[in-house]
Length: 127
Image (cartoon, rainbow, N blue to C red; front, side, top):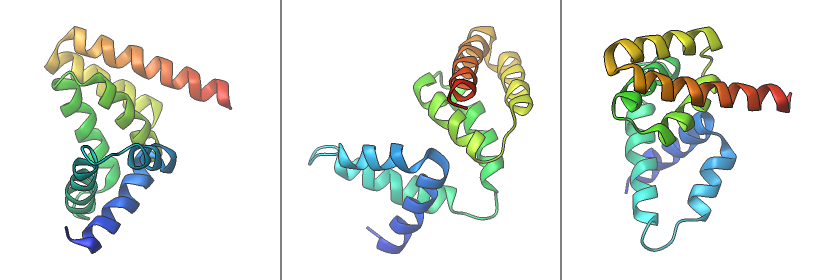
């Protein structure tokens, strides 16, 4: 493992997904799951997300559409929250969902819309 890339990835992962989520994921890792957590942190976040040629907000747009296309709704919710941290607005999320609906199908768009509505309601309720 490249320790410098891991540390850079860890910082980026926490910035996008939230420190609590990342710390929980790492704390819950065991001998079986820890190597995968390390790969995710070093490769996805240290190599991919830390490449400054594409800004985090743009990467969030890309992730939301790709994850929706793959129908990975649990990950879509996680990356929706990250997209909001990266400055994507509620209106932009709505436009992403419309685009997903056109290219991935109405059922995918509906799933995204349901998740977004729940997340927005939770955020509004928590003030």
